[in-house]
Length: 187
Image (cartoon, rainbow, N blue to C red; front, side):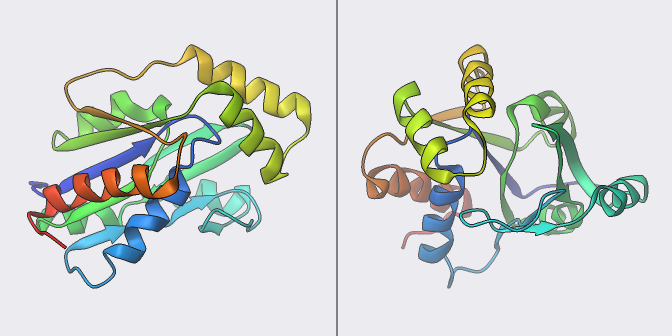
């Protein structure tokens, strides 16, 4: 199977604003054909600020066994998956945008040579404030997330860094430029 489309994997620490930036681009590109914004499957109930398909761990594990994910991983006591539908889209030459994990980069790079990694960053104090405001976790869980994010560096020729510590429009326009370049269109 030849996968010729563009695969944009958006990664970064918790609180960096990955979902917010993806939503910004999704709205701006809604009328553009051949771009797919992937809805992840997560073993967590639905929550504000993250559009995902919630499943329990039994359903997640069943889908993983049956090849329902192109990529899947464990983080923060949860299971995350990117549906295998992306392979069909990539085979057609479409562009796929997914919120992923830095931990799966080696596997993603191996499976998808056309991968472009967009690493969303923000200073530690901004991340901490966003995680507290999000209200999903206790302070110890937030502290653990921040410690992990401090220890992970993303480098490589396939990585583009976007600082999302300022106004949403600035980082959003940067991501939009990356995606339109992948599509070969202007908006």
